[in-house]
Image 1 (tube, rainbow, N blue to C red):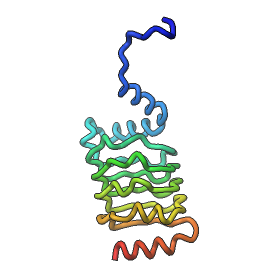
Image 2 (image 1 turned 90 degrees about the vertical axis):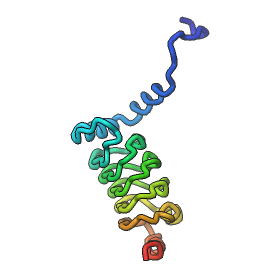
Image 3 (image 1 turned 135 degrees about the vertical axis):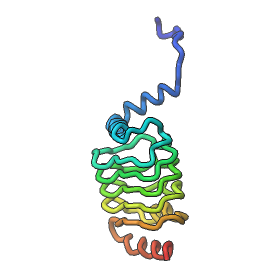
Image 4 (image 1 turned 30 degrees about the vertical axis):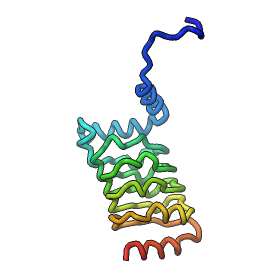
Length: 163
């Protein structure tokens, strides 16, 4: 078939996007699949918790398919962002400590979050960090440490947020 001829094969854009995602994040997909097998989950709706810590992950596939996910362990990886978490509205506990996070953009989309561990990351922008934490009314436990001189400002903000 020449380049000018159109293929008679059907195009399935969703399937194509799924394949691209799978190729982009193979270690994340494997870790997720392994965890689902260990827990014996057959349906995404049954997944309440995921243990994806200590997997050397630099990225994580979108987890929005787990509508009832409440507990997520991602500590001791190499994550730099958390864009995969924007639609996990039931998430109550999130363990992101010991990663390489420079920002936490998207956390404000998690209204049920009670526990958030962020210590041992690369967070440096105090304004962006405070912006994400604002409005998180259910947050009861926060562990973090800012890199540089922003620590005192952040602690003052957290004090007014929680007390």
